[in-house]
Image (cartoon, rainbow, N blue to C red; front, side, top):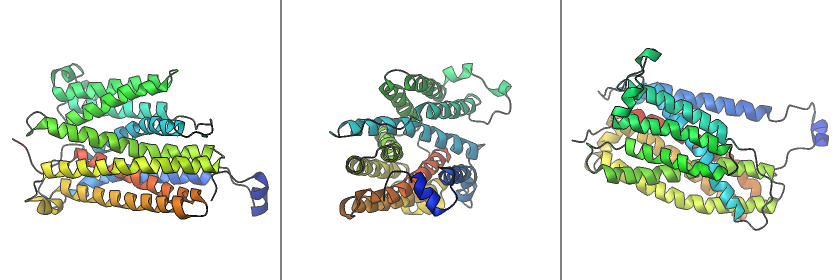
Length: 336
């Protein structure tokens, strides 16, 4: 296994040359298309025979939330892995091009779409005339939606600045806004819920966004020892992040579905069914991570871990799309 690209001589010997990256681009396009179909079609599947009523346009809202989460992960992961690379004494200076600006643009568009829904009282606007921008300032959800729109705009400007690390502040504002949005004031002990979501979302953002950038950095580097060291360092931190994600996720689920009824609600509510799907995906990601770590330690070529790590990236993408759908579905319990 190697992270370097085939030479021209090797390409000539194996037959007609293909455009570099064509197969990879097709695979990415297929995964993005599949990722878009999950939130668009998934809500109707999990809501079947539950007796629950979803909000209007739940599929579109789930898609926008998935895009927002992905846009949050990309720049946070870049900052996270770049900091890890600086801890390596012999790390090569080369760095892959940043995707932060494109992620900020996608996040801005998704946040703007979600804000337009909030402005119409959580109804899907049918024209620009239905959007009440001024009304966003009059509600808690509207103010939080505006914070996310402005935060992604500022993150994009910071990404083009001399010190891209400044992105951490607007990205942090998005995480805080999402944590507050997920736990409104009428909920029982909303501060605890927001704190759990804050930790859960922060750790998930670093975990999901960090691995793709680490693999891109490996493709850029030609030093195999440095690449293996970076993967090993990321794996150690990711294990801690996964533990925190699991603990906060279980606690949050038990707050939504008390222990006495959790088994029933996991199969009879849309929220519970989607949560089960997310748990299965996270378990698959954990297995792939263990496989990659085993190869990193035991294989003759430590960079053989690159293969399961790429599969882990695809599985993490599925986790993001399902998470976006989970936030758009009706909660199994309405707090009073």
